[in-house]
Length: 247
Image (tube, rainbow, N blue to C red; front, side, top):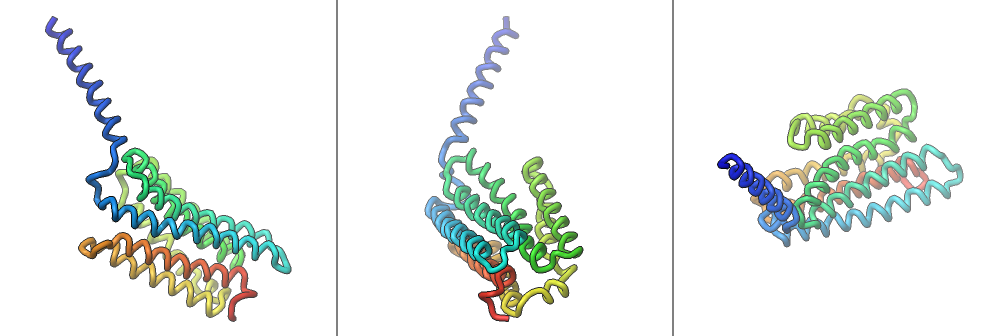
């Protein structure tokens, strides 16, 4: 009799805990790392980035489609780049803007995955249009393979291998050093300057991301990310559609 009573109590306790967990997942993120106002700022800053990315993608594709010589590689590479850019900012906007824990966690994973995709997507126009030879294809395969490995780590083990995930980010970002001479030879002075400016902007932004004592540090980081993306966007434009750039 005592065993049956204990079993019933355990069953009730499990059911109560299940209901509590479900309710908890649907509650607003009231006690999160950032205040509601800060999350609003984060969502707005990258929401602007999402709109700019979409407009920029359309401009790239229209310019490539109406060029004197339509190159399918340009269309494909610019489509990949533009899609990853829009995806990153959209995922970040939703992650910061949605208050409910369950969906917030899902969009956080998508946000982290989108970083890998954007790094690979940014490489793509340079590798498939400007380089395109053996080196370009090898780097293209390598950078997208690393992106898939990083995404697999995030989706399969979201709470593990954080050091490996950061290492993949860094490896992808610095992989171009392996072909820096060939890359530099394929770009205009403007393109090289814009790539460098974007890299410096991202790097400066990391300072604000890391130093949490700075008021609204994450929102400031978002602004640096948008500025870095703008620099790299025009670097892509300069490289892939050189008729509008200075040599």
